[in-house]
Length: 262
Ligand code: KIV
Image (cartoon, rainbow, N blue to C red; front, side, top):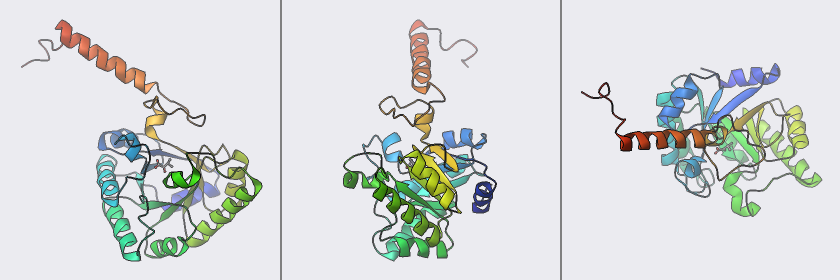
């Protein structure tokens, strides 16, 4: 199993890091057999698995349930679990209880969106022995603050603020940083300015690694096709064809055959 030290080494040796979101045991088994470096049980599961239109509905209990399922399917992959909406913005006790649930479910690290006002809490989680992955740029839990899922850091001032936040996260002890939906030049600059690896999504090729949502990567999501997604499979069509073939063979009587019967 990889550790935070491996990700540090990969950054140092300029080896790219691959991360894919994963929410269930069956997919985790497939990813477990792959070379992908890191699995993210993202709070995007509210959208991909539960059909919500944002990530706000995630709770620590829901995250822990999915982390547990992924851990069962991928016993030797490095797993990061998302801290859900507002879970680290209340009392320290509440924050640590959420971290405890996610880590005890089988994660090696938690991911936290944003930094402003969370510096102490992030440092406290790190000092408690829990690796923290930061997340800046288009942080989906702030969708209503941003007025939609919009590219961030597009002005000079916003870029400077984001760079300062990235350095602050590094100083708080974050071991890696997701950069989502920001200009490629800004992401490259942040990456070069930090000792910790950056993992981009819609942030260009200058990051230390890339992450995609599994359903996007597999072409399962036909509603959401932004320019940063590359489909490695026409999954929606492939699944649909399989379902239609099953349907037609049931209806024609071709399934089940004698060999498939007792
Ligand atoms: O929840 C998620 O899937 C994420 C990725 C988009 C980085 O945070």
